[in-house]
Amino acid sequence: MHVHVYRPGGEAKFWMDPEIELAQNYALMKRQLNSAYRLIMEHEDEIRAAWKAHFRS
Image 1: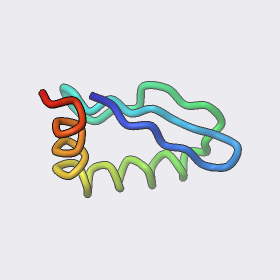
Image 2: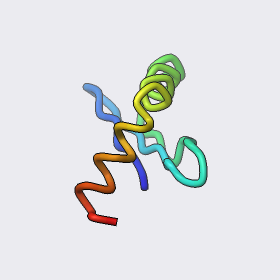
Image 3: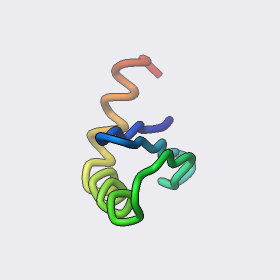
Image 4: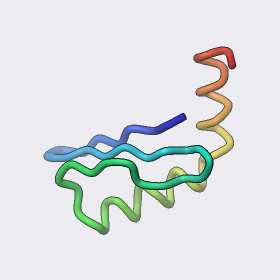
């Protein structure tokens, strides 16, 4: 399970399992990564539920 984060000029991928962590970063600044990480943490339950509904796992 993972999440992609897109911003103008860059993108990142975060793994959700076994815990939330940065998998790849393409040109995002540390501040942007930290902001994305916080949003993922705040919405973790929603993200997991949407993933499971989408992939029916």
